[in-house]
Length: 121
Image 1: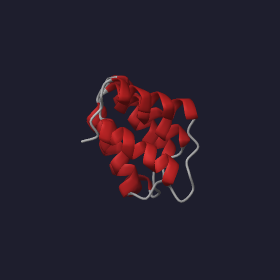
Image 2: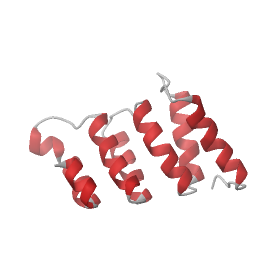
Image 3: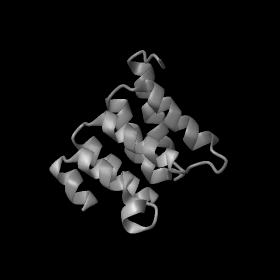
Image 4: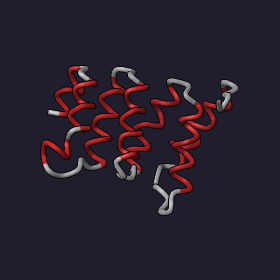
């Protein structure tokens, strides 16, 4: 159902589905569910909704993995959301257990930021 909402562009419905997952299913959604939600939002360039899904994931105590970061990072670069790009890079590199993100993904994000004279505000 989550993937169907994402493919149809029903991002608010998909977000609400994940937000209410524990109450409806009796267990917490995994990082895979959140990544699917973020991916669907990014596919239609709904960058703020993708970031909201990331924040929901973090608020609910689910740690992003390399796939989640590698999915969200290019979207934040495309949106030129440099503060969010830096937050993702910091999390990946400075988490208690560092998140394995391909170096080229991080390098590309940071070089894009520098190329456009990115302001981190």
